[in-house]
Amino acid sequence: MRDSRPKKRAAALGSAGVLVTATLIAGAVAAPVASATADTHQGQDREARGVAIAAARAAKTGIDWQDCPADWNLAKPIQCGWVSVPLDYAKPEGKQIKLAVDRIASTGTKGERQGALLYNPGGPGGSGLRFPARVTGKNPVWANTAKAYDFVGFDPRGVGKSAPISCADPQEFVKAPKMDPVPRSEADKLVQRKLAREYAEGCYERSGAMLPHMTTPNSARDLDVIRAALGEKKLNFLGVSYGTYLGAVYATLFPGHVRRMVVDSVVNPSREKIWYQANLDQDVAFEGRWKDWQDWVAANDAVFHLGATRDAVQAQWLKLRATAEKKPLGGVVGPAELIGFFQSAPYYDSAWVPVATVFSQYVAGDTQALVDAAAPDLSDTAGNAASENGNAVYTAVECTDAKWPTSWRKWDRDNTRLHADHPFMTWANAWMNLPCATWPVKQRTPVNVKSGKGLPPVLIVQAERDAATPYAGAVELHRRLQGSRLITEKGAGSHGVTGLVNSCVNDRVDTYLLTGRVDRSDVTCAPHATPKP
Image 1 (cartoon, rainbow, N blue to C red):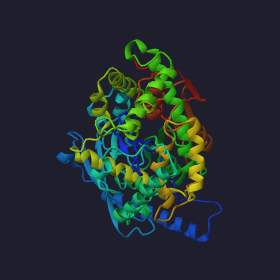
Image 2 (cartoon, rainbow, N blue to C red; image 1 turned 60 degrees about the vertical axis):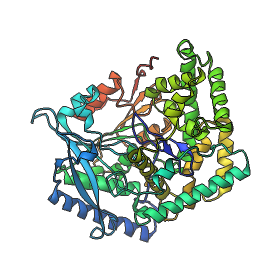
Image 3 (cartoon, rainbow, N blue to C red; image 1 turned 30 degrees about the horizontal axis):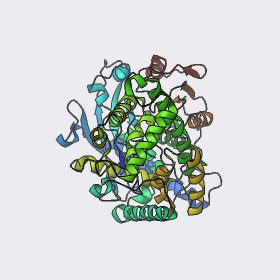
Image 4 (tube, rainbow, N blue to C red; image 1 turned 90 degrees about the vertical axis):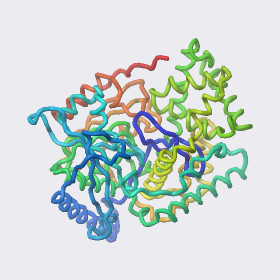
């Protein structure tokens, strides 16, 4: 599942026609492999030379900063520009694509300025272009860092303004209701398998030239070219969710180019996890966080009237789900759409109150509030195109980054087993990822993420009960990156910790970005404030 925004999410339709708000997780691909063949090594050498050529070219060209186009909705003083990168780094003089970038200047004095801070919000498929708005919006969490850094956002390759890819007609993509992701029969599974195969074929038909190059290592190489275009000798980077994997791959490929790196809500970088197993792990974590939310709803029964125990709240959920399965609410909201809406609660604490409020209104007799919240808006053609594009990039990167099982028996066995105890998300996630089983371009070998010469301490931030990126991923990355420090938000589970108000976390992130200093040992922080209804 894909996560495209650290805080607020828009529902996206899963590849196999399941309405899911894609949850996180993202790509890995060809990079140094100890046992690689001579051909693979030659390919890596060519790509390493290619990125050096492209970065040198970008450093010479720079970025022609201008006021942003009106339809980008990025008001002055934010500026926009373009960076050209090779589609294929093994052929740096071949086809080029343009990446959209934007920035806002640091707010401090000339003496306080430390350079540019680049940001990736996750996905794969998320746009980073809203990052400078943290400064124009006067977000207090980032006020100190904004004095020292230009905030720079970008659309990764294939995303948004950067040579966008597509796998389906956006209006068809968002149509509802979709099939219930939980199969009732073998016939249901056959239909979903057909939808997944057709989605993979659609990606190839609409975006075939881009697909082989939609990998995390290529996005990491793009990041290095953007660094050079900005005139920065070294990279300062903040990555959330999938952005942590992008950062980890960058740190592996370009350890001597890293100045400061914060990774927040960490994808497990183990080659054994990327990407099939990572998604199965996610299903388990989502069930746990779903129960956390239900416990909170039950504790606030005086407000929501959904039941005074977790079991009572779950019973209301199952009743709602069964009702929508029998007859979609408003003709458009079935179980798939319900999952797309309700999954934002286990994702983000900021969704706890809104989701519980709509659920409460439904139980009290107001069906329309839930229909308005969970149904697609066919009139929002721009939003629908963005959702389709985000899902296409998510699928393309994860499917191309790594080898996926091609045996349906394995998918069926693994997801049937998991669903028994983790029913909230398992099948929805499976259908979303199933196009990877019939992916039409070569699938790569994930990068062996590790420390390299010159890599400074990396700051890792993670909530203990994160659903989209389970805690074990942060521990694994910490183990692989020598000198890194892990800040754990104990007992918390919101995805994307650095944007929340928690002085124990915020102060350390500021200190690191402003001075490069980390604590002598790992740190455990108390959780941020629980939402109040």
